[in-house]
Image (cartoon, rainbow, N blue to C red; front, side, top):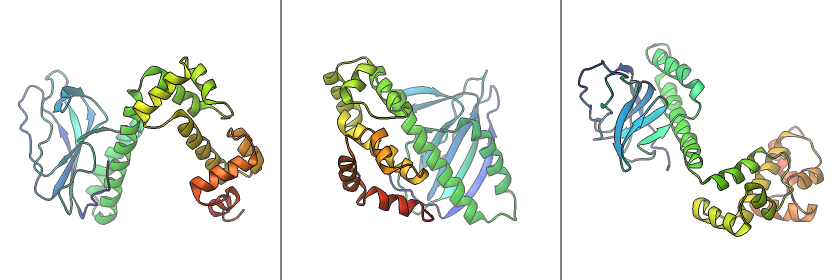
Length: 260
């Protein structure tokens, strides 16, 4: 995904229910527009670089100028979707053609609000345009991250889950490999191939990420944060933090907690 092609106007918001057993004619996205279809129910078949695949609720189809809407659907389970059209300044793909809504339980509320607010003349269309475009862009971004992680090899997925779920990160790469059930060299190979990083660098980044959240969201002693995030000593924590953030931990905390 690349920089947002910021829309200049919200053109339309509609609900489409595919009629059972009837042919659906695809619609070409107009010049200077982007057309988003978010599947809310049923199933649809769509051809991408990977061939024809079946997609269900939560799939986002992001069409740019000249591309056609979805139309293939099984007669026993026709698809339903919300369609949102934006006017954009240029023809440029910033979002994958197919992505997925990450916060699935919130989808129905979003669809209801988008449809209702578009047809409410008291709502500022410029604000609504900005909100709808950025919200779907965000869901597509997060959904694609989750989709990529879901396709990772199981040992690597286990290692990442261990990092994500750990309350303390005071373990080594060798210990992480053992917990994931693989050798340390194999873990290095998996990280390099799928994440374009070494386990050591990934673990360091994760430790720093956790440290930033602790600094910004608590009044815990900095030495305790360094220890529980897995740094050998306070000096190595300060050195790594300054290198990554451009400031010492105390300054970072003051900027994020202006009343501290």
